[in-house]
Length: 299
Image 1 (tube, rainbow, N blue to C red):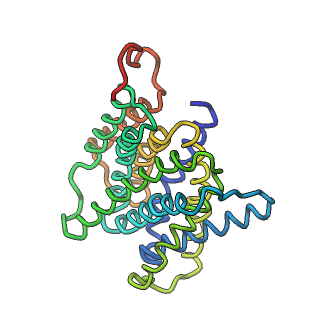
Image 2: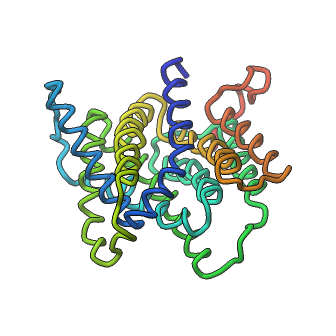
């Protein structure tokens, strides 16, 4: 990867790794539906106003349908799943499930013919999944119905993120990052808005709650999604979405230091395994460690 792509990759990993702490805060105040709806609509509105302020020309010629599909998956599906799951299974467990996104992405991109996985990238994904197994271990809380639903929501969120990433790469390749981000958040927020009637706010928000909401909308949504869609266009959906491996490691360690969540030696080993798998997928390993050129791509 080019230096700019590596910088974008690390930016996404750090910001999304810390985002789980902010998600917990806004869900406590706005509920798991309100947290996503308000975050998405503020993100879309602020980016549109910023574009108008800088007189940036926006082109939505792709039509409403692709924006709606990306919004339904990468925004509504993914963020609703994570917001529902995080308070029920914990930030560390929610982050661990996020690391399954690259596996789903690789499968979808193969089926759609967007990318061809080499033996090296396939080995990296296998290592990443193996690292997830080491990280999960045994849950620290009782396996209740609510806990199981949280796990299911996390898996569905991971699939939605992978699907939306590949769909954007396939159908919005000629669309700008700003347009894709505005369209995705606007449509995703409008889709979740009616659900507020069924899942009202948890309590009356205070000033601190609105501060966390703005941080989630502007920094952790607008800035990251613009960077992410640019990264997808530059290095492809599977390699871009592999950032979730590193997001998982950062989020787990943040949970351990900030939320006092305990980590075992096995989980430390899992984190290292995930980072090695990430390096293989991104082709950041020394030449002598790579598979030989004559080895065929995996069909």
